[in-house]
Image (tube, rainbow, N blue to C red; front, side, top):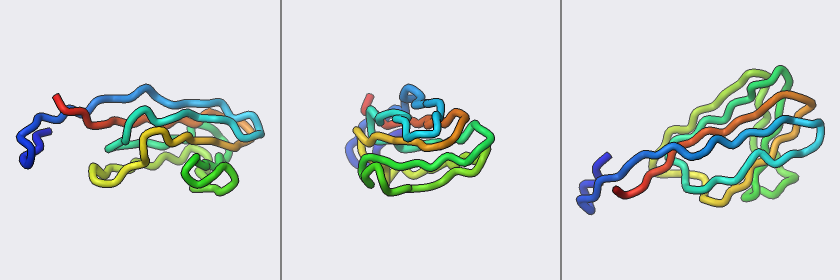
Length: 105
């Protein structure tokens, strides 16, 4: 990716996957190490999983993912902020968050 305004080459890099096994109680899925430009939320289990995040507080559900649902958010201009912590609540299964971020070369 080339930023024409600043004449800077930008690299899209993968961040470490965030993943957690659901226990029936709220668990921490992980923390964003950078502002994502593309992010995938993936309920890999067979039951619904409710997702909350630190920017909403742990009591407010952002989205409940039915069994097997995945969402891809692909927007270079708007992103969750670095440091956002994601939490999941589900009876069982695994939930993962994969994302890429932009870094100047």
